[in-house]
Image (cartoon, rainbow over all chains, first blue to last red):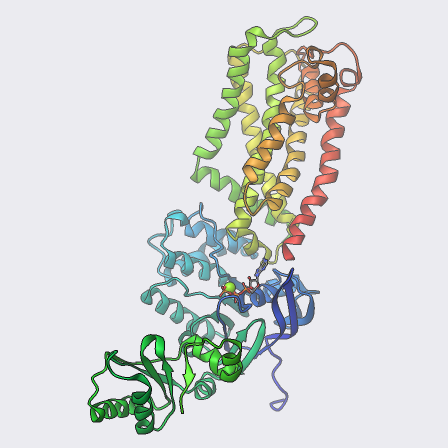
Length: 331
Length: 259
Ligand SMILES: Nc1ncnc2c1ncn2[C@@H]1O[C@H](COP(=O)(O)OP(=O)(O)OP(=O)(O)O)[C@@H](O)[C@H]1O
Ligand SMILES: [Mg+2]
């Protein structure tokens, strides 16, 4: 028993979907074991929403197969729908009704009796901090409240698989933290979560595994730790005063720090991969000091999504495809 | 979850919309009443009904029929809003049938139609409309009016999905106004130029309006012809044909949201 592999909650194999001439998914593969949070990371237009819509039976596809909670999304759509909760990229709640009315209505549509639907609504309103606004029209809610209601609706039935399409885009840090907290709680109760995001940081915070999607294909599928190792962890960016020559200074810093830097002439800056974070930062500071250079700016930051793709899709290919790219490797 | 039960829950949702935003149905009602008053009191004096008959008695069944037909706009707009705001996607991701969603829309719209008919009848009686009918024919008249409204629901759902990108209201109005008025609803067809009269006589709106006139003992403004002789049959047939065409089309449009 314990040697047989667990049947994944979500499987996609070779999914292809085109809208006219646009190829949205181009052989997309995914496997998510039950009870885990899986991050689907990609920039605008990567195909994240398309993948979510296909897996939640909202969208048909051209080729490939997909199974959710053990059922085929095409042939057994009704069974799939019984097991999933969906929080789409755009809030999909009734604007005219109140938050409570939304939860009761969707609860009843999921098959709860009126009394059960009411008490479930009360529970969800309380745990999503919406009790005070429960009887106001949703059109008066803030973006964060609407998001929370949207997530609450997706959880009415405690689904076995919950889909969250960019659940924190457009939220302030506090609201984002609340959503993160909710996702963790949901996962603790055994629900499998597929979460799409444009932020490496968010996927890192929540997911035990991350699939990086680019132009409709999975370009990486790994644990956050492995991915970060692959893309080199944090970055230290030094912005130099204009009177300090960029090239020679960057070379001197690279030699002192012991890692190659990426020169960005447009911003008169150089960036170092800082796998060990503060250690590299300290070395950069020492090297700057030794060279007698006072930087304009000095930051330690997470890699941007751009840098993730640069690394994962190969800098040489990228540089060849886009010769004006800002970053040119320096040895 | 049965389709009927899910449909009923979605109907209740439509009714809650009106309870929370009463201005929407109230302005809908006011519009119908205003149209009735404009034609009945303002323009009515200049209208002649061929044969013998009072124009107000001629007009009322026509107004009731137009109100049913114009209902298509409410259906289409509600449908477009649901698709645009993601509510339809939410329904589509849930374990309920597509039929339940349409049925729910239909239920709410039929309730609205009944309240609209009630209001227009009361206002009509207040300004002097006379009915001369048995209870049976009055009930049949109401049923025919509601049959037309029911048929319009499927056109409305179809157009609401087809024009989900925008322009639903204008598209529906461009369709509805000429069709509504190129009929026996407010102008007797025998007073129209021959070719217009011939087109108007074939309009489903004319069929329902004429049938209701005949059932309620109101002047039909007609002296023989297919419409005059078979009004009730036509008023049953037209909605049946419209439903037979547009119910499958609306179901297909809904399914094609998957593409
Ligand atoms: N209905 C549609 N018609 C035509 N093209 C579409 C449609 N929906 C998506 N696309 C295209 O398919 C590609 C993938 O879109 P998708 O919405 O899946 O991306 P995404 O990763 O969710 O992006 P975002 O981060 O902006 O939400 C894009 O190029 C998009 O323009
Ligand atoms: Mg998207």
